[in-house]
Length: 470
Image 1 (tube, one colour):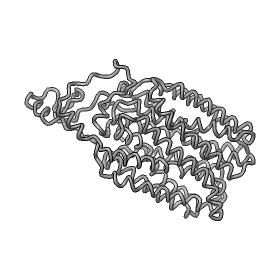
Image 2 (cartoon, rainbow, N blue to C red):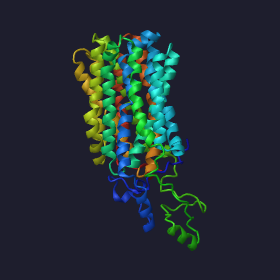
Image 3 (cartoon, one colour):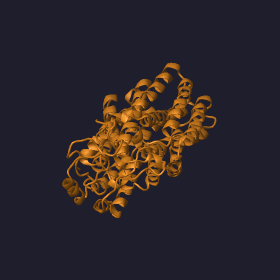
Image 4 (cartoon, rainbow, N blue to C red):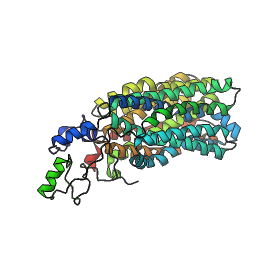
């Protein structure tokens, strides 16, 4: 994917500077003709479309994690049924991160060609099909392939959710991100809590216990079908004359509503890009810090979702209670995901929140190491607070760019690169557990990884925009 190939979203959102940005860092905008303002107003999404988008966002968010946490709650049964080793089970818990990285890189290109709504709709359909096929697997390879299909659908939706929010709600990024994150946490918690009891109620078959989540995923497809062809809020910029164009050409451009958003050295007829949109995203230190922070918090989240129930069960806690404890961890994100993004959006630096979440993460992992059965609900609560680094980093992605296209590029880069970084963690945890016969070494490793996570998060949380660095 070319980093200098932006997806053009709502023009008004693209032109608005981040409210937290000091005036000195915002380039002065050139004079804008009245025709342009009227043209942009015409592209504002109607109110009914915004309501439909909220419904679609919430239904999609509820479905973005049950495929993972339902598997975590039933991992022992799946391992026994398919004959998986500890390393292979670790690979299975890393499949989400691998799929998110692989397909996340493709999401912006697909969105440019087909539109974000169409891509998310296809993602929800792929998720539904994958969840239907996974219980039919007779071996590990087929199970992994069906899981990969479901997770591919989740991956493209993951990357495009901040894009959808910025496109339809440029003035309410923090609030809408909070709602979306709250729904995501709710779906995650419910899947963790009810997978084991519902499996027991259906005769103890883990295949039925995993397959039932396809019904919930199918419900999410409907609203996105209605948004497949929606183009409200999307503005494809007109081609504007080069700076040396004749006065007649300039007058014609003004009459047709074209604007020069920034001076360029391109030839006549080339699209005009805002400052910073022409540079490769890999040149931005902030983008790299966001990617590393995303990857390290993702490592902790997937180890928690994939391995915490097994750790608790090995400590003598029943399967049902282990599922409830995982649900407690995930449920902590419901209220906190609603409060944290708006709070972070009002702060000039998100570093203090990063440090607070890291302290909870260290305490939770060390508690699982030292005395998992002594205070399991405390460890679950602490890790639940720590997992709110996910909505925090989504909010930071929306704040670290001034424009809609910038958010697209930053979201794709930070999430896809971050997921690549998070792949080895769950595999290494499973391998270390199998090699040592205990969870001590894996949990100490997870506590040690908090240090680079805090460093990257504090640097990513500084009041910077990628356009300034490019």
